[in-house]
Amino acid sequence: MAKDRVESKYFRVAPGIELHYLEKGEGRPLVFIPGLTFSGEIFKAQLEYFSGNYRVIAIDPRGQGLSAKTVDGNDYMTHGRDLAALMDGLGLDGAVLVGWSTGNLEVWSYIRQFGKEKLKAAVTIDMSPLPLSADPTWWTEGTMEELSEVATQYLTSPEGSRAFFSDYATGVMIQHEMEPAELEYLLDISGRTPYWVCKALFCDAIFSNFLETAREVGAGMPSLMFIAEHWAGVARPFVEQQLPGYEIQVMGGHLMFYEYPEKWNGLLEEFLNRLP
Figure 1 (cartoon, rainbow, N blue to C red):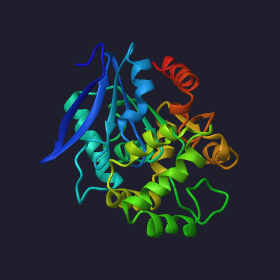
Figure 2 (cartoon, helix red, strand yellow):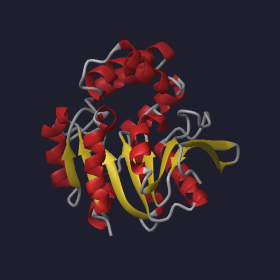
Figure 3 (tube, rainbow, N blue to C red):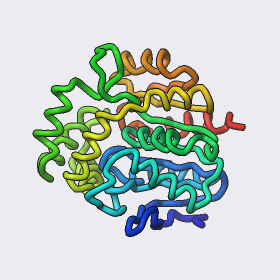
């Protein structure tokens, strides 16, 4: 078990399918799940900060980072089953799941399929459980036209995928003006996911509906949602009305925990300290 340094490990979740994960520390399991195309490396600041009191694990979901790339299983129900296999294999009882972006869908997928018995709390970062809706007042990822353009015009080649994530990183993820080296760092992490895996996951995410599961989470266990500032006017009322029971924190951009780790870690620590 990792103690004083971050360890890079693999675990077989299905025949021929290994997930890569980073681990450091001992104690209650704190499991971080990244968003579309990203790896657990994006949580480096959280691995270092929380490992003094927790067993911190940051995973690369199937198709992302150093985990297996497969032609099947690039959907969030499968990702939920992969997460369950990893948690069972590592003995992660009493865990706190922390999902970012589409990692939220993995949190809710796990709970829909396997329940809350092995969890202490759920933390979700900046994505609705219903990413697409005809209701313009609801928190979604965009209009059908906008999302169709991403799927059919960008995520059809490595160059298109990189262009999309470059625009998304500078326009949505990060609030400060990045130096070229920082943008390249983020795009290199993202680029480890093949464009065809990215497209499959993107389309599955957009048509996912975990609203009822997310409501059950808010009603049945400690739960926290972080929301980016740029769409708090829509997202906060949505969470307050549709997901009663969730604590809400508004800060930063989509990649808030990376850009503002000291503030974000402090808010999460306050939430964790209140858990029984």
